[in-house]
Each structure stands twice: as structure tokens, then as C-alpha cells.
Image (cartoon, rainbow, N blue to C red; front, side, top):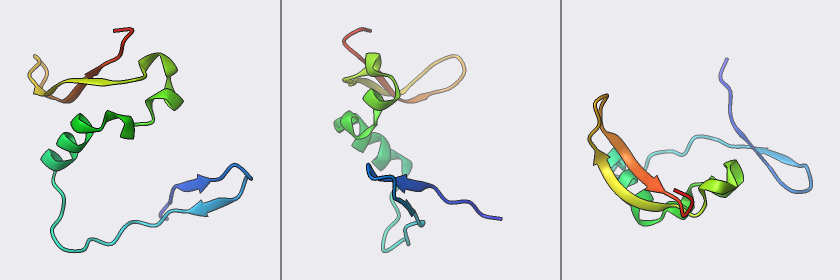
Length: 78
């Protein structure tokens, strides 16, 4: 059984989201990391936890003892 996410609109109607078909070159992890670094507002942070909004990037592939953090952000509240 395969499950799919649904996008629920303000009127309560839901649309099943289908996987995008890959066309041409595939995007890699570095591309996504850089996109998020340049545009952290893409992440729905305010909807998840408003205290973490807005985000500012402070590093990519930040080394830690347990491995690299892909993207590290901070908010005005720290």
C-alpha cells in the first residue's frame, strides 16, 4: 500500500499530491541546501513554531561531533 500527502485548502477540500516526474537533470542535495540557505522563508517555520521565525542562515555543512548539519539557521530569539 502506498500513501500520498494531501493538500487541504481553506474550504476543507483536499487534493492528493502526486510525485513529480523527473525531467532532465536531477537536483542534488547541494542544490537544495543552497536554495534553502538563500531562501529560508521556503520553510514553513512560522506555521510549525512561530518563535523560530524568521530564519537566518549561519552555515551549511556545519561540522559537529555526530556529523555535519546540512543547514544551520538562527532566529532573532536565538
